[in-house]
Length: 232
Image 1 (tube, rainbow, N blue to C red):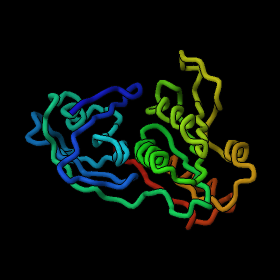
Image 2: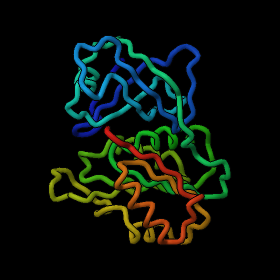
Image 3: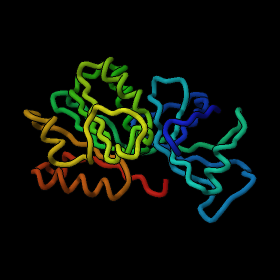
Image 4: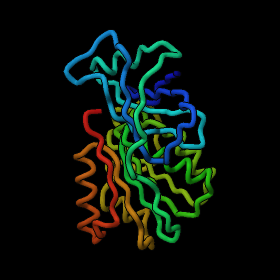
Protein backbone atom coordinates (compact mmCIF):
# COMPACT_ATOMS: atom_id res chain seq x y z
CA UNK A 1 0.00 0.00 0.00
CA UNK A 2 1.29 3.44 -0.93
CA UNK A 3 -0.16 6.92 -0.57
CA UNK A 4 0.36 10.41 -1.92
CA UNK A 5 -1.32 13.80 -1.75
CA UNK A 6 -2.98 14.56 -5.10
CA UNK A 7 -4.46 17.97 -4.14
CA UNK A 8 -4.83 20.05 -0.98
CA UNK A 9 -6.88 17.85 1.36
CA UNK A 10 -7.07 14.94 -1.12
CA UNK A 11 -5.02 11.76 -0.95
CA UNK A 12 -4.62 8.78 -3.25
CA UNK A 13 -3.96 5.26 -1.94
CA UNK A 14 -2.54 2.43 -4.05
CA UNK A 15 -3.17 -1.21 -3.19
CA UNK A 16 -1.92 -4.41 -4.80
CA UNK A 17 -4.46 -6.06 -7.05
CA UNK A 18 -5.78 -9.27 -5.48
CA UNK A 19 -4.86 -12.44 -7.39
CA UNK A 20 -7.12 -12.71 -10.41
CA UNK A 21 -8.78 -9.42 -9.55
CA UNK A 22 -10.29 -7.54 -12.48
CA UNK A 23 -12.59 -4.55 -12.89
CA UNK A 24 -14.00 -2.32 -15.62
CA UNK A 25 -13.06 1.33 -15.91
CA UNK A 26 -15.60 3.40 -13.97
CA UNK A 27 -16.49 0.81 -11.33
CA UNK A 28 -16.24 1.15 -7.54
CA UNK A 29 -15.39 -1.01 -4.54
CA UNK A 30 -16.37 -1.25 -0.88
CA UNK A 31 -13.40 -1.13 1.47
CA UNK A 32 -13.34 -2.42 5.06
CA UNK A 33 -10.62 -1.56 7.55
CA UNK A 34 -9.41 -4.65 9.42
CA UNK A 35 -9.38 -4.23 13.22
CA UNK A 36 -8.89 -0.43 13.09
CA UNK A 37 -7.46 1.24 16.21
CA UNK A 38 -10.45 3.61 16.30
CA UNK A 39 -13.94 3.81 14.83
CA UNK A 40 -16.97 6.09 14.95
CA UNK A 41 -20.67 6.11 14.10
CA UNK A 42 -19.92 6.12 10.36
CA UNK A 43 -18.38 2.66 10.65
CA UNK A 44 -15.40 0.89 9.11
CA UNK A 45 -16.66 0.54 5.51
CA UNK A 46 -16.60 3.06 2.67
CA UNK A 47 -17.37 2.92 -1.02
CA UNK A 48 -14.68 4.30 -3.36
CA UNK A 49 -14.60 4.70 -7.12
CA UNK A 50 -11.50 3.07 -8.56
CA UNK A 51 -9.28 5.86 -9.85
CA UNK A 52 -6.74 3.60 -11.55
CA UNK A 53 -7.38 2.15 -14.98
CA UNK A 54 -7.65 -1.62 -15.45
CA UNK A 55 -4.36 -1.72 -17.34
CA UNK A 56 -2.46 -0.14 -14.43
CA UNK A 57 -0.65 -2.26 -11.85
CA UNK A 58 -2.55 -1.22 -8.71
CA UNK A 59 -6.01 -0.48 -7.40
CA UNK A 60 -6.00 3.23 -6.63
CA UNK A 61 -8.61 5.10 -4.65
CA UNK A 62 -8.60 8.80 -3.82
CA UNK A 63 -10.57 10.73 -1.24
CA UNK A 64 -11.12 14.02 0.56
CA UNK A 65 -9.50 13.53 3.95
CA UNK A 66 -12.34 14.53 6.26
CA UNK A 67 -11.76 14.27 10.00
CA UNK A 68 -13.44 10.91 10.58
CA UNK A 69 -12.09 7.79 12.26
CA UNK A 70 -12.05 5.89 8.96
CA UNK A 71 -10.04 8.60 7.17
CA UNK A 72 -7.65 9.06 10.09
CA UNK A 73 -6.89 5.33 10.14
CA UNK A 74 -6.61 5.09 6.35
CA UNK A 75 -4.17 8.02 6.27
CA UNK A 76 -1.85 6.39 8.81
CA UNK A 77 -2.02 2.73 7.71
CA UNK A 78 1.48 1.23 7.65
CA UNK A 79 2.84 0.49 4.20
CA UNK A 80 1.97 -3.11 3.43
CA UNK A 81 -1.15 -3.11 5.61
CA UNK A 82 -4.12 -5.14 4.41
CA UNK A 83 -7.70 -4.02 3.89
CA UNK A 84 -10.77 -5.99 2.84
CA UNK A 85 -12.14 -5.12 -0.60
CA UNK A 86 -15.51 -6.19 -1.99
CA UNK A 87 -16.62 -5.66 -5.57
CA UNK A 88 -16.22 -4.32 -8.12
CA UNK A 89 -19.68 -2.81 -8.50
CA UNK A 90 -21.36 -0.29 -10.78
CA UNK A 91 -22.11 0.25 -14.44
CA UNK A 92 -20.63 3.68 -15.16
CA UNK A 93 -18.67 3.08 -18.36
CA UNK A 94 -17.87 4.64 -21.71
CA UNK A 95 -20.60 3.87 -24.24
CA UNK A 96 -19.79 1.55 -27.12
CA UNK A 97 -20.81 3.67 -30.13
CA UNK A 98 -17.67 5.64 -31.00
CA UNK A 99 -19.71 7.72 -33.44
CA UNK A 100 -21.31 9.52 -30.49
CA UNK A 101 -19.04 11.94 -28.60
CA UNK A 102 -18.64 11.66 -24.82
CA UNK A 103 -19.04 14.83 -22.76
CA UNK A 104 -17.72 14.35 -19.21
CA UNK A 105 -18.59 16.90 -16.50
CA UNK A 106 -16.96 16.60 -13.10
CA UNK A 107 -15.55 18.48 -10.15
CA UNK A 108 -13.05 17.83 -7.36
CA UNK A 109 -12.71 14.26 -6.15
CA UNK A 110 -15.58 13.32 -8.49
CA UNK A 111 -12.82 12.88 -11.09
CA UNK A 112 -11.88 9.44 -9.75
CA UNK A 113 -14.03 7.23 -12.03
CA UNK A 114 -13.36 9.63 -14.92
CA UNK A 115 -9.62 9.13 -14.57
CA UNK A 116 -10.07 5.37 -14.87
CA UNK A 117 -12.39 5.63 -17.88
CA UNK A 118 -10.30 8.20 -19.75
CA UNK A 119 -6.94 6.49 -19.23
CA UNK A 120 -8.36 3.15 -20.32
CA UNK A 121 -10.01 4.68 -23.40
CA UNK A 122 -6.63 6.10 -24.40
CA UNK A 123 -4.81 2.83 -23.69
CA UNK A 124 -7.37 0.91 -25.79
CA UNK A 125 -7.22 3.52 -28.58
CA UNK A 126 -10.95 4.00 -28.46
CA UNK A 127 -12.05 6.32 -31.25
CA UNK A 128 -14.60 8.35 -29.28
CA UNK A 129 -14.25 12.12 -29.29
CA UNK A 130 -14.18 12.98 -25.58
CA UNK A 131 -14.57 16.39 -23.95
CA UNK A 132 -13.78 16.62 -20.24
CA UNK A 133 -15.03 19.69 -18.35
CA UNK A 134 -13.43 19.75 -14.90
CA UNK A 135 -14.51 22.35 -12.35
CA UNK A 136 -12.60 23.28 -9.20
CA UNK A 137 -12.11 26.32 -6.99
CA UNK A 138 -8.34 26.52 -7.56
CA UNK A 139 -5.64 24.42 -9.25
CA UNK A 140 -4.48 23.47 -5.75
CA UNK A 141 -7.87 21.77 -5.21
CA UNK A 142 -7.86 19.77 -8.46
CA UNK A 143 -6.79 16.11 -8.15
CA UNK A 144 -5.07 14.57 -11.19
CA UNK A 145 -4.90 17.87 -13.07
CA UNK A 146 -1.50 17.02 -14.53
CA UNK A 147 -2.66 13.51 -15.47
CA UNK A 148 -5.43 15.00 -17.59
CA UNK A 149 -3.10 17.50 -19.24
CA UNK A 150 -0.75 14.65 -20.13
CA UNK A 151 -3.65 12.62 -21.48
CA UNK A 152 -4.67 15.45 -23.79
CA UNK A 153 -1.17 15.41 -25.27
CA UNK A 154 -1.35 11.63 -25.81
CA UNK A 155 -4.87 11.35 -27.23
CA UNK A 156 -5.80 13.48 -30.25
CA UNK A 157 -9.49 12.69 -29.65
CA UNK A 158 -9.46 14.03 -26.07
CA UNK A 159 -10.14 17.65 -25.13
CA UNK A 160 -9.55 18.76 -21.54
CA UNK A 161 -11.36 21.92 -20.37
CA UNK A 162 -10.54 22.68 -16.70
CA UNK A 163 -12.15 25.74 -15.12
CA UNK A 164 -11.44 27.48 -11.79
CA UNK A 165 -14.04 29.47 -9.85
CA UNK A 166 -11.92 31.07 -7.09
CA UNK A 167 -8.58 31.96 -8.64
CA UNK A 168 -8.37 35.04 -6.41
CA UNK A 169 -7.60 32.59 -3.58
CA UNK A 170 -4.85 30.78 -5.50
CA UNK A 171 -1.11 31.44 -5.54
CA UNK A 172 -0.61 29.54 -8.81
CA UNK A 173 -0.74 30.98 -12.35
CA UNK A 174 -3.76 30.10 -14.47
CA UNK A 175 -4.40 30.72 -18.16
CA UNK A 176 -7.45 28.50 -18.55
CA UNK A 177 -11.18 29.00 -18.15
CA UNK A 178 -12.64 30.66 -15.06
CA UNK A 179 -15.99 30.23 -13.35
CA UNK A 180 -18.23 27.22 -12.95
CA UNK A 181 -19.27 24.72 -15.58
CA UNK A 182 -22.36 26.36 -17.07
CA UNK A 183 -24.37 26.69 -20.26
CA UNK A 184 -22.05 29.34 -21.70
CA UNK A 185 -18.88 27.29 -21.11
CA UNK A 186 -20.41 24.20 -22.69
CA UNK A 187 -21.62 26.18 -25.70
CA UNK A 188 -18.18 27.75 -26.18
CA UNK A 189 -16.40 24.42 -26.48
CA UNK A 190 -19.09 22.18 -27.99
CA UNK A 191 -19.91 24.07 -31.18
CA UNK A 192 -21.02 21.57 -33.79
CA UNK A 193 -21.00 18.61 -31.38
CA UNK A 194 -24.18 16.57 -31.82
CA UNK A 195 -25.63 13.28 -30.56
CA UNK A 196 -23.38 13.20 -27.49
CA UNK A 197 -23.63 11.05 -24.37
CA UNK A 198 -23.12 13.05 -21.16
CA UNK A 199 -21.48 11.82 -17.95
CA UNK A 200 -21.73 13.78 -14.67
CA UNK A 201 -19.81 12.82 -11.52
CA UNK A 202 -19.44 14.75 -8.28
CA UNK A 203 -21.38 16.00 -5.26
CA UNK A 204 -25.20 15.66 -5.47
CA UNK A 205 -25.76 19.42 -5.76
CA UNK A 206 -23.37 19.70 -8.69
CA UNK A 207 -24.83 16.65 -10.42
CA UNK A 208 -28.37 18.01 -10.06
CA UNK A 209 -27.43 21.48 -11.32
CA UNK A 210 -25.58 20.17 -14.37
CA UNK A 211 -28.35 17.71 -15.20
CA UNK A 212 -30.82 20.62 -15.15
CA UNK A 213 -28.60 22.66 -17.49
CA UNK A 214 -28.44 19.75 -19.94
CA UNK A 215 -32.17 19.05 -19.75
CA UNK A 216 -32.99 22.72 -20.27
CA UNK A 217 -30.72 22.61 -23.31
CA UNK A 218 -32.72 19.76 -24.83
CA UNK A 219 -30.55 16.77 -23.89
CA UNK A 220 -32.62 13.62 -23.48
CA UNK A 221 -32.49 11.99 -20.03
CA UNK A 222 -31.48 8.71 -21.67
CA UNK A 223 -28.27 10.42 -22.84
CA UNK A 224 -27.24 11.55 -19.32
CA UNK A 225 -25.37 9.18 -17.00
CA UNK A 226 -24.50 10.22 -13.46
CA UNK A 227 -22.68 9.14 -10.34
CA UNK A 228 -23.17 11.10 -7.11
CA UNK A 229 -20.49 11.30 -4.44
CA UNK A 230 -22.06 11.53 -0.98
CA UNK A 231 -20.31 11.61 2.37
CA UNK A 232 -16.82 11.58 0.90
